[in-house]
Image (cartoon, rainbow, N blue to C red):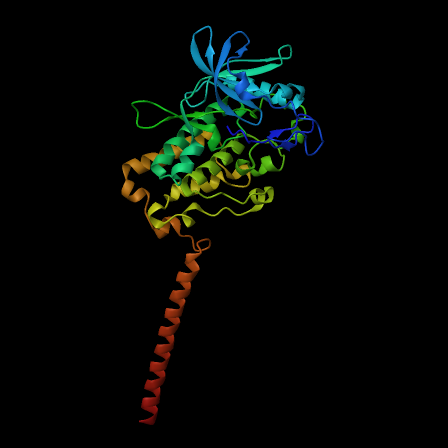
Length: 375
């Protein structure tokens, strides 16, 4: 997490920068909304956990490495800023995160051990599985764009995690590279993927929290068009967000511009128009990626299960025939006359050549006619 991340005013829910003491929208005093993270080291939480070191600071709270007294092991302990206990929205979001996480048990989803929200002690915490590794965001900063063979296992595991969450009627709503964690696995050739931070998750079989309809929740860059418009979201909103992540993994480009209007209306450039011929995606992968990024939910894969199966099929095709699956530079897979900017130039060149040949033929016929007439 980022210690400069904005957080939400607990009165009007406007985004507020880290260093601000007053809400820029309603003017509420936020001087006690932040607590000194380092001052928390050594603190005992609920007589169960001792905070040992700081792991990160975010918009809503702090995450610590903590010692669990009962088992004498280490956990990641997330503390909500105590000032946010005043906010009905923040309390509801925190409770939803705990309840959503408690429903989920899957190898690719971080495990929740314990949680509590106490007005008496002004403490709200989540005790979770401690992960060692780094978020996908760091990997992409270091080496994006990723080869398809490296990106596919990550996408397959995240789609499996989403399928498990959706089966439990939980949608993540904040899927992004920061929340996809690459857990170290000593002795193995690749990390284990963990989906983390269900802080704004929604439970489709529960009543939405009060005041939530007035707040734009999520990270704009990865939000679906319907999420940006404040419309009801279902599981396909998560598939759009994963499509944005996949697009960035494979092209190192943003899907659209930086505004809500761009996300809702702007055309998405097919990824093979941005990649050199030797890195062109298979036709099936490009088509799947573009469908994940459909503006309307009904244009996307019907479920995370379907997405998972299609990604696995592409991975199998790469293993079976790697020389034909990528088809570097193959026009049949990556060139579309109506969308490829190079296609009209090729067509124009051919038209000029044909016209020249026709004119030469006409001239020859005219010359022959003149020869016979005057002879």
